[in-house]
Each structure stands twice: as structure tokens, then as C-alpha cells.
Length: 412
Image (cartoon, rainbow, N blue to C red; front, side, top):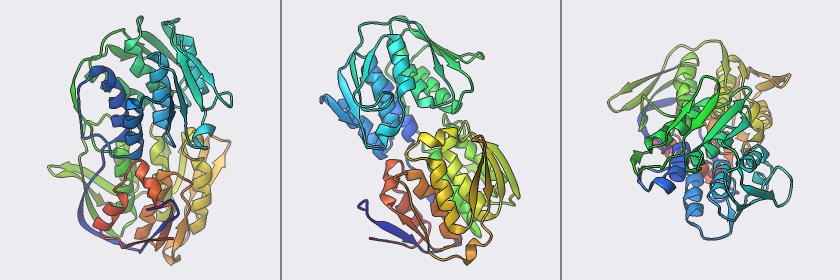
């Protein structure tokens, strides 16, 4: 698929029993790749997502200038990686990537002792990691309410510092499960680290040790199938590769979707999704799982469920301004996302989505926009523009939709 294609999906309201082999988690894969560059262990089942392929390629590259394209995690992790391993690199990306702030991370790296400079706009990529003369501080403070990726980026390098590091998280901590995922992965490879009740992360100086690690399937990718089941008239989907004791915070989709009409149970073959009665009103704080918000907003809007949701602040600085994008695209089928004081968002459902035909959805160069809106195909014909954006995290998504029985037609 080229970036100019669209995919038209014919309505299919009944999904027969289907097993979907989910892609591996790019969140786990990208963290494991950084840690394993020190540990030299064995990594299995790495993600095929574009972001992970970029991470693997750039970690091996001898070039001074590295282009992460639109991979935000890769940008943040590699800036910290090269800065604190005393590597002179220039990191840049797409125009949108160069609009996504990185100042909080760079300030923290400078506090530790790294020399990093901006090459264009203060606080934004492209940046150059110049050198790391030595550790200046054994403790830093960093805001916890903007992006957990800044925190994870520094955490993974902290054991390699001669004095270790204490990271004090200021204010509300967003996406805490992602920080805990990083911590657990670090420990898997031998790091001595703990997250205290006072929102301090204490990491001792130590060496990572070789370990064998198999990456779990992606719970974010699972969320779109929960959306399919929620909106279908009848459905039974089995998702394989997921773990009941997952490191991923997006496993909260099980809890969330129970309110929205999806029962999920682990059986020997995987996680089985089936339909149950849904609530008519839903309230949830997405601060710890912001990547689920688009899928849930679309389900509520299409299913007739009013919702009050919070914790969406970080969506402004993702692949696109996801709040703006959601507001625009929900309006295409008569729903809306109302923002109140920048802290609360109300989903007002569509009055009659089943009466609409061939809804067209812009994706804003955002993989999650494409896949979050795809479940509407259980209610109406739908066209998704630029479907290749799904390659960023779930390259087999459209193939899996065909497996579930949907008719897809790709074209200009």
C-alpha cells in the first residue's frame, strides 16, 4: 500500500468464531532492545512494527545522523541512549516528530551531565548528543504528568551510570503502568531498581546480565478487537499470545470493555471475547492507558453510550493531536467529543449510525486513528484513508480483518 491509498470496508455485523494471532508488543520490544544492547541476551518474538524495525536499524547504524521518522518512542529512547553512552549522534524525524516536545528529557540528561544541543528549535528535535564527560548528579527531578517515555528512557540507562540514579517524579504520574513495565524488564535483566511510595525511582549502579526474554503480544492491538466485538451484533473472537500476568498497562482494556459490552476470559487457546450487556453511561480516567482512549471513544459514540473521560492531556503530543482528530472524525457520523476546561471530555453518541453509508475517516498519519475507527465497519460501510499507517504498530491488521470476514477493497 502506498500512502495515497484508501481501504473501503463493507459492513459486516456478525463475526463468526475467529482466532487472531496478535502482533508482538512494540512497547516491550523497544525497551528490551535498549536493555539488551548492554545485556547481550536472547530476545524472542520481537515486534514486526515499523517503530521496532526502525529501533533495531538505528541501534546498529554507524551513521552520525539518524532519522527516526515518526517513531516517538524510538526518538526518546535513543536520545537518552546516545547521550549517556557518550556517542555523538544527530537525531531527527518527520516534520510532525520535530514538533513533538523533548525539552523535559533533554533537561534531565543535562542535569545528569550529558551535553545535548538543539539544532533548530529550542525544546524540539532535531537534537545532537555531543558527549558525556561524566555523571554530575546522582539524583534528578522530572515531571511525571507529560510522557512516561522520558522517564523510561532515563531509567533504562541509569544502571550504567557510575553512581546509579534517583529519579524524583514531580506531580501527577501519567502512564504509570509503562514505567512499571520498564522497571520489570530492567529487573528481568538484572537491574537493582525500585519504585517507592513517594514517587521516587531508585536505581543502583550495576551491570545488566544476559537473559532470555520473549515479547508478549500487544494489548493495544487487542483493543481494536474488543471494539469489534462491542459493536457487532454477534461475535466471538479469540486473541492469542496474551498473558494474564502482563507487563502492559493496556491490559486494562478487559476491565474497560466489560462496561461497554465485552466479556473476556482466558482459556487454553487464548483470550476469548464475547458479547454481554453494556452500560448506558461510562466514566473512566485514561491517565494510565492513554493509547486506549481513541478506541473507547469510538465504541461509546457508535454504541450509544454517553461517557465522561479524563486523563487525555498527553494525546495532544502524540503522532497527531488526537483530541482534535477524534473531534473531527466523530463528527462525520453525528457524534461529538466535548472538551470542558481541558480536563474532562464528554462523548455524545451518534443518533443513528446504522442509517449512514460509506463513512470516510481521515487518519492524520496516526496508526491508532485508523484502527480505532475500523470497528465501525460492524455498523456501516466505512472508508479509511491512508491505511498504511497501521504498519507503525500492527502491520497485519488489515489482513486480520479479512480473516474475521470483512470484505476490504484497497484503492486510490
